[in-house]
Image (cartoon, rainbow, N blue to C red):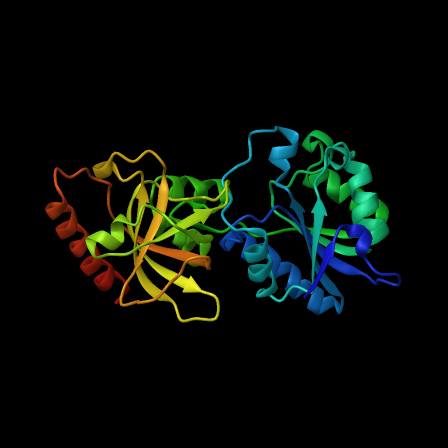
Length: 308
């Protein structure tokens, strides 16, 4: 897959293409269906498939301070999109100037002048241009003018729930990582670098990796979870993960701490990923160390059963 920074990176002599556009945070089942449809149509037409996405998140530029929790970091999002068979990932820098681009200019500059779109595949709720003034109806009218087709990507739903990034964020925020995984088509992942913590876990016999996550990462609700710890180039490890402020020790800083089962070694400084499988319990406060250690042992046993 080719990766372009900005649509201006399209090479000279670039032919026609099938384009799909969106933030695609999470690359969930709905996104997969839309992108997959674009890839299939491109192959049928014998042209390249292009995914256009944006960085940073448009919300942060249009309404500073409103950046939503991020389900997939940029590198992970690119990996997931590449796995769908896309030919080109075009990341457009979303600047204040770009946000003021009128809908008609958005279509002319990106889809016509640079990407030479033969077909544009978008979701039914797609909006574009300054103040999101453009919709699918306008895109279809402009398509007739400039000579490209427009197709709506299929909605994906289960039990009456349409999968969306907003819905998945709400699941993660509530700690329902099982529902999030159902919509994503895979476990929800949180990434970060292992940093030194208070080392209380080591003193208790359960040394944990304290994960420093991205400021906008979609971290699940406080609680204890069964997860798989993924190291670069290594086999996934079963892990019991605690998220919260360590109330037994009057902690104030919210942390993500993972105890890797059956692992001995040093993880400090490594960049890891945690794939959350199921929620085990809420955070609790204990009057002494003994019941806390007993509970952690039970959490480890339940993690083994959940990941077995």
